[in-house]
Image (tube, rainbow over all chains, first blue to last red; front, side):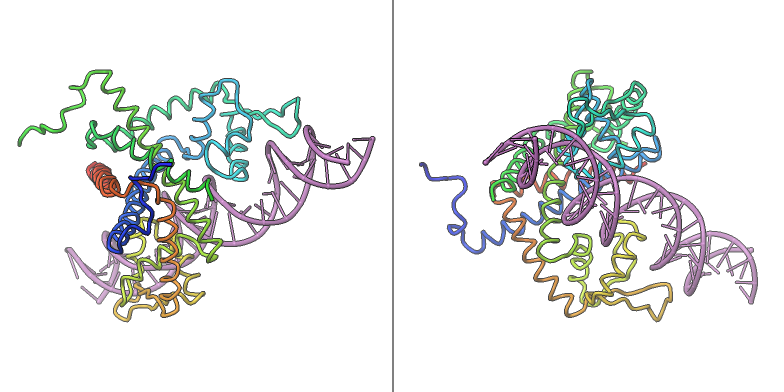
Length: 168
Length: 168
DNA sequence: GCAAATTATTTTAAGCATAAAATATTTCGA
DNA sequence: TCGAAATATTTTATGCTTAAAATAATTTGC
């Protein structure tokens, strides 16, 4: 087995390096949180003002938009990274409001299939268009040639964190 | 007034470039959200399990830790980027639990000063230490030499979004 | 075949978050 | 000085979020 050149064991770092890395990690987390909070707050505000809608509701529709034949209800918490109990009232209301349907499976009576309605799909497309343009507006001044680089680094960050969560 | 060389008007981009940038912006937002959600969820879980504490409570203490003479209550919502009404019950409980004090100002009876107690400071230091090591654990495999680059890009992203929010 | 484990979903309790309205106090301007 | 605008904070209504417990249906192992 080759020695891991690019990530030496912690013990090989001296105290100053350790401290610097530690501080940088905290700063990274605070920046990440600040960016997300800023963008999320503005998107939420616009969803409410323009469409009287919330982001979690939009997120559910976004998942269903790509699944013409619907999704098993239990898939939603996994894909959206939220708890199952959380989705119950959100799905309830989307059904009430006519955006989606919820049909019990005939094969397994525990399971339900959720599926977007025609009107739901129309409403989603309209909102998705606005969502995209709001984002474009917010990020307009971020250099286009840096977008993919940043996405790549965030991909790496994400997989690093995921690995760390799965390991122990 | 000089023409803005570095950010040409949208119309100067052809359709394909526009589309690509649009998709990249959406991807960036989804990555940002995924990273934040992953890390935040794990930190929240650990705060609850190890200290029976929440992140919003920790965030309040973190602000007060750097202010030995306390803070005007109204400063907290600004610094933490949350609504004022949100903080009322959080501060209430921190006072009840003895982590902080809330004293009406003698000069202006509308104003209150919040200040960490000695025990609050002790508890905060202990939790902050764990918080740092949890973060270090989650980010351990992210290359140390890329940390500052990513922080820099997020700083730029943040200021770009902030500017966009202040302008219109 | 049937009890026990597993799986899908909902319910409950507690806390966070916002917006909008309400309350209380201070400041400002004619 | 006195009424109106501004400021600091809380309250209210609504919705998201989680963890843990409850319910219901299916599968598994003997």
